[in-house]
Image 1 (cartoon, helix red, strand yellow):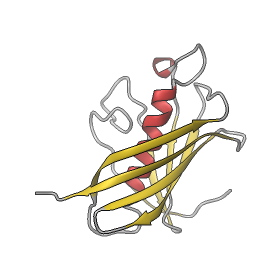
Image 2 (spheres, helix red, strand yellow; image 1 turned 120 degrees about the vertical axis):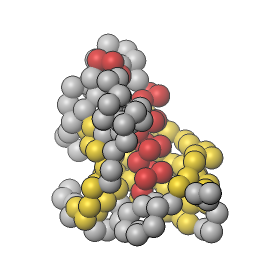
Image 3 (cartoon, rainbow, N blue to C red; image 1 turned 180 degrees about the vertical axis):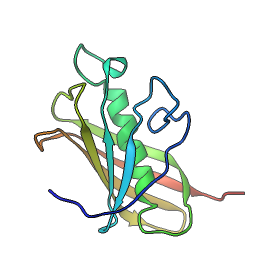
Image 4 (spheres, rainbow, N blue to C red; image 1 turned 135 degrees about the vertical axis):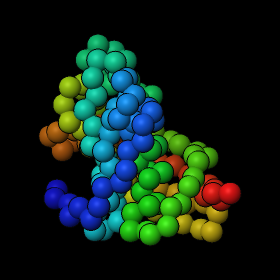
Length: 142
């Protein structure tokens, strides 16, 4: 599937998922689409493995969580800070190391204090390897 990219979200320094200076992190890049979805691209390496040659389930859950949490920003001018309240992850296929993977996330419900979203971790051949659903609370910047 093709996506029309509207913008790229910033990376941080030390975040486990997006930190560019975290030598053991995923160094994921996040892109907002015109349809207000979020696409995360990353290439897991040996440091991220559980079983040999496979991404650790906790690392898969971490990028799914980050993608859903960032999806609330798609198409917004003001920053929405949030933290995870609940996260449910389902694993469907082994997730390989050393190849580019993507996570597609979207918001499914939004209220004044909470929002919910879902995501899919997609293999290079298009198969869905893991899915996630999460609930997040919005935080006041002060």
